[in-house]
Image: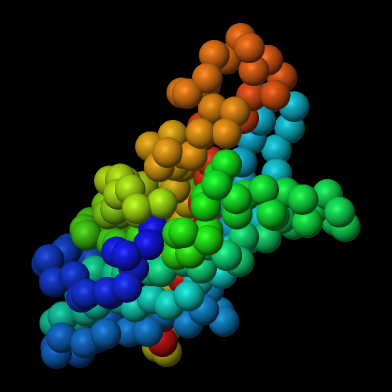
Length: 201
């Protein structure tokens, strides 16, 4: 998630989605103050969770339709919320280290929405989102359901995605790189969950 984040080009691929009103192509800024991004990772002996800050983002709209989105994440803001004191500081530092996300070299991550199509609503989710996630300079295609809400003053997209950290070369205690039988109860699962609620004015 590094050089790719230096440019935030508009995505102009037409998508079938909800109307935001208006006919002209425009950009809606996603507000970091009213948006949230959370994470959860699991290991054999339990799990940890926390949050992370959005650096910047926007929705692209044209003729009243959402045509794309770019969200840039500040990886240096990784924050553990289920621990306190020294344990929290230790895990925060470890997640930022080269064992995990190497934030000194890769200070940002990016999500780009490339398609958004309506689906039969289930558990509140009413659209299928597709796009790409870039972490540590590696880009992976993703798809997941989201809830899109259009209000008079804002547009909100919320949901969660499950990512495989091994696809981003995050190796620490991963069965994709080390013998699971040797890791034993030290194994950390590859899948981790990102939850989000993005609010654009």
